[in-house]
Amino acid sequence: MLEPTMDNRRYRPGETGHQDNLDGEVRNDWVLDEVGSLFDLPFNDLLFKAQKIHRIWFNPNKVQMSTLLSIKTGGCPEDCGYCSQSIKFDTGLDASSLMKVEEVLRAARQAKEGGASRFCMGAAWRNPKDRDMGAICAMIEGVNSLGMESCATLGMLTADQAKQLKTAGLNYYNHNIDTSRRYYKEIISTRTMDDRIETLDHVRGAGLNVCCGGIIGMGESRDDRIDMLHALATMPSHPQSVPINRLVRVEGTPLSGSNDLDSFDFVKTIAVARILMPKSVVRLSAGREDMNEEFQALCFVAGANSIFIGEELLTTPNPELAQDRDMFARLGIEPMMAHECPAEI
Ligand code: SAM
Ligand code: DTB
Ligand code: SF4
Image (cartoon, rainbow, N blue to C red; front, side):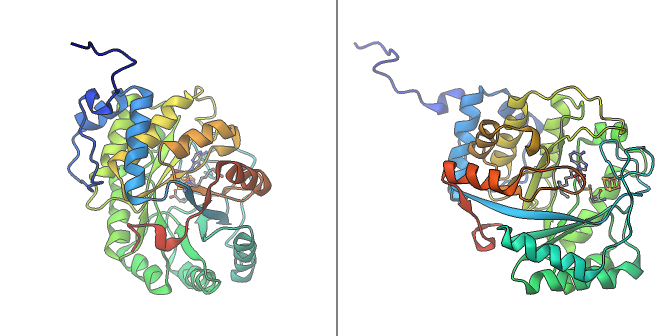
């Protein structure tokens, strides 16, 4: 009998002992061990599995593009250890008040010309004041009237504020859990993970698309990454958008001296997110400025399918538009539009 050798035998990824979820089933009952086993897979097996699942719900050659604008910068009373905008750290950032609606819409038009299909407005607030809601709703209406999707990230919301944003036409609300429940208190002391979960409930309850993810590279352990992805993948419904940020080390913040992150660990985190939440868009979010194109391409193979374009994120740099265009042309990647996001409300 012919003995199997590398020449006459096909390697089957099923041999790693994992179910392949090849119908792309959306599950909310993941257990921690399953998530840990995914992180244990050899890199090639993990990426192959993620790419197979990616293709069930998505065209693998399309990436959704959003542009961010900081509509209210700095002076934030929270103490998130990674953030340039906290009043508690001296990061040299100039604080400013809420931008005028017209200025915001000028930036949105420019973002559309740059190729963004969604415009995300970020404010350095613990929570919006009711007196700010009128201007915010006018910005949302203005962005939508340009034919773009709108996204906002304004801190904690009441149920009523979430409803007001929905009524104004907001498409997405971003509110990250950022890390594991265990590590949360090492990073932020001015609010709890439960505060975050409560706002997410209000956002979901209002019928908005949820954008919720976290940051990798803050000194968290492998278990913290497992817990964070498990928390996202066992929410009442998966966030429609899952941003995975690589920490941008900002001078003056407590996390500025964080150790370098192993690039493969970052790519693996994307792949596990893709497998756990097969119908969600996974965003290769902050940190691209310090990644070469090969690293980014690996993230796309792992199942990342959205990015921020434009030369600035909120307060830190992002790659130039021309550089991104060139990378996408060479990778054969085209823009993904709203109707191609299968989980979107
Ligand atoms: N203040 C609001 C809040 O905290 O939700 C909205 C803006 S806040 C800047 C949005 C998200 O940006 C944070 O939850 C965090 O995930 C991400 N972020 C902030 N600073 C970052 C950094 N230096 N590196 C990577 N991600 C960062
Ligand atoms: C998200 O997860 N990342 C974006 C967006 N949501 C709001 C913000 C990244 C901010 C990076 C640091 C900065 O530019 O200030
Ligand atoms: Fe404020 Fe948001 Fe920065 Fe935290 S992440 S300090 S809440 S702007």
